[in-house]
Structures are given as C-alpha cells and as structure tokens.
Length: 134
Ligand code: CO
Image (cartoon, rainbow, N blue to C red; front, side, top):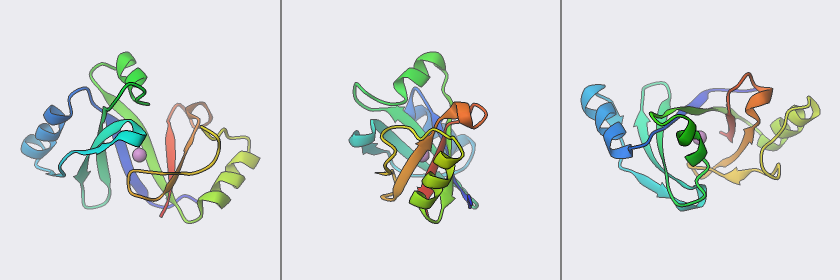
C-alpha cells in the first residue's frame, strides 16, 4: 500500500543554522524558508535525488514540534512521510487494523498542498508516520 518515501522531517532549534549546514557542509540543494503558520512550522526543503529532507522549526505558540524540541533540544527526526495513492482508502484500512489516526481522522492539506494524515507513533514502533496522497 505505501509507496515512495516522500520525506524525512527533522525538527531543528535553529533553522538558519541547519539550512546552512546542509547547504554548505553537506553540499545539498536547500530551499529558502517557507513559513506555514497553519501548521505551526517554518520549513526548509533539502532536495536529494531520491527523496527530500524537511528541516522544521517551530512557528507560533501552538507549534506541534515545540514539545518535541523541549525533549530533544538538539533536534531530531520528527516523522517520516510515505506516499499513498488514496488517502481515504489507506486511512480506512489502517483504522480497521486498529491503528490510531491523529486529530479528527480527516486528512488535512500538508506542506505540499496535498492531503495528509498522521498515525500514532505507538502503533508504528515509536515513529510518527505521515501519509501523503501522491
Ligand atoms: Co511531513
């Protein structure tokens, strides 16, 4: 059911420093910062030949990554995102298997303008998983 790895998201305490490190030391192609106030993050896209890395910095008071950074002040891998063809079909299949869908269970529009859902990390071996309709 799951397809390509769409991205790995890394929460960082200092986006400018992280972007500079990826650009100048790792030699990666790094986008400008994109503020996404509705999602409570500012994101920088690191484009790799087979996938991308998203560097996330909290934006605003209710950022979903603020608590993660309190526990991991240096930053860390926050989630992985797998592509699915049909997000409603994927949700229904996973829910029927007993997996918990975060939020109200309805897809939201994610950082790439496509519908996304998040699955509870306790149901997937300690990893927060995002599904994005490709
Ligand atoms: Co993501």
